[in-house]
Length: 160
Length: 160
DNA sequence: CGCTTGCTTGGAGTGCACTCCAACCTTCTA
DNA sequence: TAGAAGGTTGGAGTGCACTCCAAGCAAGCG
Image 1 (spheres, rainbow over the protein chains, first blue to last red):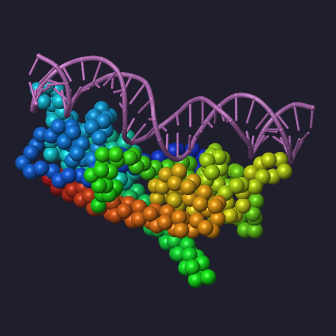
Image 2 (image 1 turned 90 degrees about the vertical axis):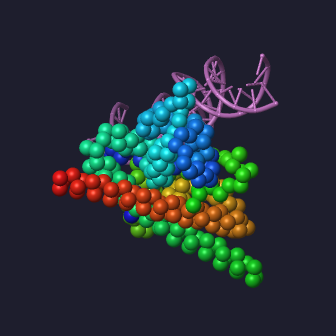
Image 3 (image 1 turned 60 degrees about the vertical axis):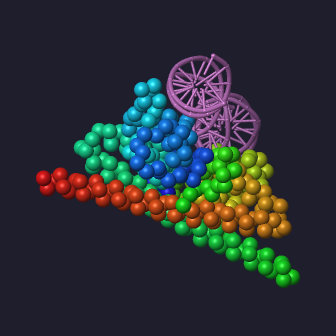
């Protein structure tokens, strides 16, 4: 199983494929309080495990579907925003670049006529996930093999 | 399943946990030629899928176990080096930071008395891999759910 | 001989995903 | 009414893993 299927032509111009899974200051996501639908940025930070910095950054780059503001201009997130952030978190775990997530967010903003494109994007992501899982399975076998080797060697040296 | 198990104390000082899987210019790894044990850097690049730049960089940071040189000072890699690079590639797929791989390489250089530490390191890596696979499984379910939704919506609109 | 190809080096540059800073504003509590 | 706690912004900084550059050396070829 190769990571990128490439023809000889693509090999020459192979572009950088960078998948970054960055899990910064992840706190155990608290359960969402019942009957609430307006959250401050720090509440969302606590609920989502993302920093306030990251939440503002997500909004700036177009990864959030327009966040409400209070009369003083402070962000007020809704349960729908939390749902979206949870989904984005899943996409992030797949190793999808942020730019692609933004693309998906744009499609969502454009309305129902982008269902085709969204489905296609998610199906490609699905294929990527399966590939990655296969790679991890493969890696697991190698790790187990090495671990067995070390365990064996230790047993042998203890008996000696 | 949380990514980082944290006590309240660790939560405050939660350190950045960054796992980067960077698959740059990966070409389909050619099969290794038989009966050869001295490869130039470009041959290794073709065989391993890593760029010559990256191979030199790996050596500089201590991720390679001393590479032979020709009488003119050029690198001559062996089959053992290729084996090592293949293993490093597996570790990279797990999302292990390069610094940790260097640590493992150091343990290897220090000899057989580091078997304990090496086994421990690989077992931790193994646990990380299992965690990541579980996360991906979870994500797959979410993706399937969304894909079904879009497929359903499309079918409905076509029938209408 | 000149030319091309491929290798060498230290150090600087790139791209991504955050992460932080300074300066400021509003609301709450003592 | 003072001060702390929390929010706002644009823009600069960070860490990681590469990625590239300039200058130079060695080998092969017509």
